[in-house]
Amino acid sequence: MDDLHERMEHLSRRVDTAAVPDLERARERHTRRRRTSALVVGVALAAIVALLAVQMIRPAAPSVPVASDGPSSDTVTVWPDADTGDEPWRSSPERLIERFSYLVLGWSTPDIVEMDGAYELRPEPCPDAARCVPPLTVTTAEVSTGLWSVRSVSQPDLMIDVPVAAPATALTGGSRIRFDLGLADDRAAHVGMVASNGCREATAFEVGLDAGSHVLELPNVTTDDPACDDLGTGYVFAYAMDDTTVPTGDPLLEAAAIEYPWLTVIPIYLEMEESDGTSTSPPAETLTVSCGSVGTGVVPRAVAAGPMGVALEFEDANDGVTLRIDESMTVSERHVVLDLPPGRHEVYCSMGEAVTTPVPFEVVDAEGYWTDPSVDCAPPDSIEEATPVAGPTSWEDMLVWVALPENLPEGFPIVRARFVGYPESDPARIIGMFLDPDDQLIRRLNVIRLGPDEWTVETVTCPIK
Image (cartoon, rainbow, N blue to C red; front, side, top):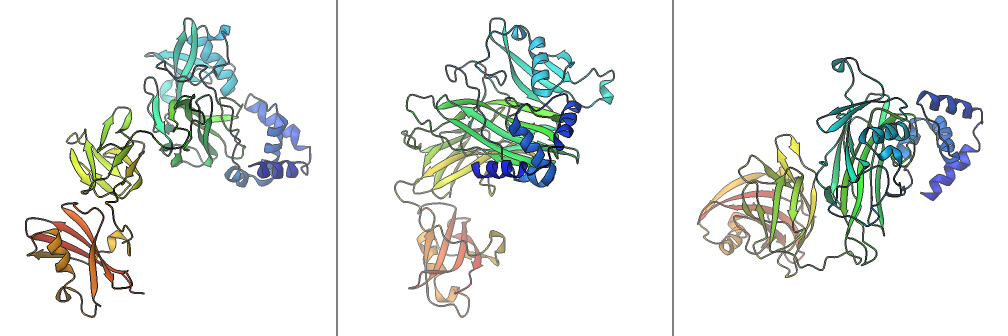
């Protein structure tokens, strides 16, 4: 990062200073001016490399506003920061929003209309709402008597898949946040997350995004000090600018030439791990997942594998909602045992086209039940045949049956078969067939038990090296 900024400064010193008046005039059109020499350097560089600079630059980590006493049950707000005192403009929601409009958006005479406990905000009055672009929706909170803060800002063309929950939605490191951006061809969006627990700061950014869906992965952060809170406060944001303008990082802390569709900011908590990066709580025997109004709920975040696999309880089964795990596995039953290998996985809720933000969880296999996960010799959709089988009455019998010479394709060498996954998983198992003694995988069988002695065997043949 430092090397990039040094190269930017080196290049900017080679730029004709005649570009500076042009910069000032551009800023007047956007009702604000850049006041730091670093930003002048960035815009000068953008004039040289145009769109390429927008795609390559990564803004520096900003200073994150944090509640003075750390997270609490109080409503989390996004603006102003905790160091802002009892200013006169915080005495009412209207005066607060007027100040926010001027400092963050650059609007000197905004139109503010109260609607159902929130406020619709436009840069100027709209005589006919049907002919105007959608406004910003601003919610506020009275953080103490007569002292107001901005709680959230939203615009329908800058959608963030995080609900405005009370007091705030808790996210974990490794979660992926989806942004759905509706932008004109000459606009670029910049998205990010900032959070802090008073000891550590967490940031993540993606800049120069076009219209469409994009994903931002949140960083894993340790608390750094056992005395620090394990929850950080912060927000996720998306803002739009002209696609030739260099982004500033966090638009609430540093002035940006924001253009329509302007800005969305949602308050969050960010869970921060213990200082050694591990949890002191033992993994649970069952993973409980719910799909509530605030997104996917996963309790706990670590589950122990058993001899049959990973036990999962889906609290919203039969409500028209399904679970998706790792993009490939679908769950609709209330109680199910999953054949998931040890390690990190993700789960999210799905109802039609609507999905929630994926939430990570960990499968812990302390007893070593899972065996030999390396059986992917071909893509899952390359199954060559599915054969009904009758006769074997147990998994052990099936293990013998698949390795009999008469049940192997002609020309196959003598092989040995063994289970892949958990030793008691049922009704579906994977059986790997290996060339003995080289232990080379030559076939993968997806075996599904249909009844006491009825089976289906799906076959994938692997190339023999």
